Length: 180
Image 1 (cartoon, rainbow, N blue to C red):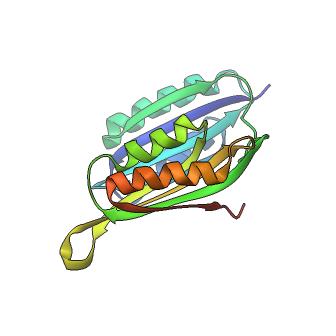
Image 2: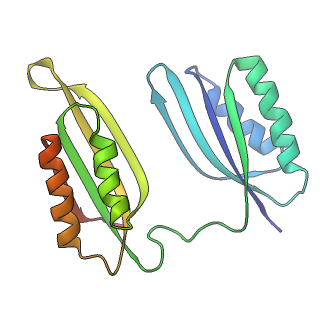
C-alpha cells in the first residue's frame, strides 16, 4: 500500500536547496510525484507530493527534514495524506476554467475574487499572483487561477459575479475555459 506525504519547505534562497530536498526524498525510499517551487521575496518555497511503499518512510522523512532544518535554516512541514490521491484536474463533474485579473495593487483582491468563487462552489486548483511596477511606477497586480467549476454552475452567472467584484475592486477580470 502506498503512503502519501506533502512536504513543504521554506528557506533563504541558495543554490542546492532543491537538490537537498530531492535527495531527502530519494534517500528515504520515497518517490517525488509532483511539486511546485518558487521564489517569494528573498525565500524559496517548495511543496512536494511524495509517495512511498515502506511504512517507515514517513519517519525517515521527518528525521531527514529535521537535519535539513538544522543544517540549512529551513522550515519544513510534513503531512501524511489519508487515502489515495484526488482525481486529476479537472475533477469529475467539473469543467476547468482560467481566471485572470489585473489592476492597481490594493488589499483585498485575492480575498474578494476567491470569496465569489467559493460562494459558487468553485474549487481553486492553482493560484499565482505577483505585484510588479506598472505604468508610472505604481504597483500593478496580476492574478492567475485555474479553477474547477461544477457542471451545474452557469459560467455566465459566475462571470457576472466576478465582474461585479472586480468593479468594486477597480480591476479587470476574465473567466475563460482553460486549455487542459
